[in-house]
Image 1 (tube, one colour):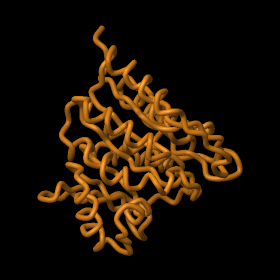
Image 2 (spheres, one colour):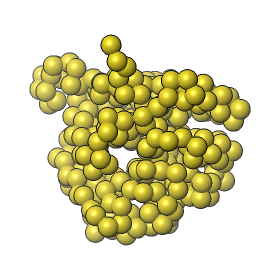
Image 3 (spheres, one colour):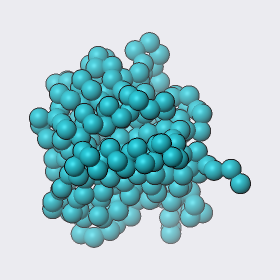
Image 4 (cartoon, one colour):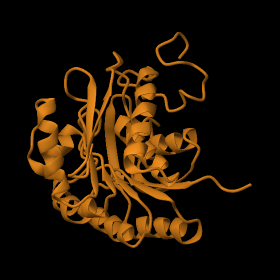
Amino acid sequence: MSAPPRVLTVAGSDSGGGAGIQADLKTMLALGTHGMSVVTAVTAQNSRGVQGAWELPAEAVRAQYRSVVDDIGVQAVKTGMLASAELVEAVAELLAATDAPTVVDPVGVSKHGDPLLAASALDSVRTRLLPAATVATPNLDEVAQLTGVRVESERDLRRAAEAVLGFGPRWVLIKGGHLAGDAVDLLTDGSEEHWLRAPRHDNRHTHGTGCTLASAVACGLAKGRSVPEAVAAAKEYVTGAIAAGFALGAGIGPVDHGWRLSGHTPGTPGA
């Protein structure tokens, strides 16, 4: 039997299993790819927030990456929590030498508002990491962190996209999920635009949405889909995962990465 498409996540570990490499690997399995991981940091994390975070040495990150890429190979790479300027620069260097599409999720803060990227690393994200991205997938808080552009309404999404594209990614997906109304995202390469809309589900259990979306995009690219096709399929998958999100612990629960595998339709009893 031939191996499924191979996708590599370079991200932090979420001990609660809702985000980070755990969410990435669940997404990759659900979407029919073989997920592999480079752990950049370890967090003590649950439904209430992040209680601690410890980044790995750059040497350990490089060794994991080279072990996977040099032997197994990759059809797509996704990056998440990189924690420090040193790790951002090490990963950017590795990506530049890898012949595979890359999805960069410029993780700055957790769903609970806990910082996951040192302020000193922002310039490295702008000048080293974003130029290596096939697709960058910032949320509105990350757009503000990186560009200073504050999105107050759907009209501001185009301005935000232009600002992020200025740092060099081929495509940018501005995630407008924090705006009121439908969940509206803008995908653009500066010349063509794709507006993606989905109904907003009344579900507070949305931990891991950003990681899940970026990983789903990487899965689509690994299968040979175009960026617009991969992003549209990822949006559909994440919308279903949000609808099927479930309570876990005393805080914000995770999306359901396996909603398609369960045989349930989101929003129905038992979903």
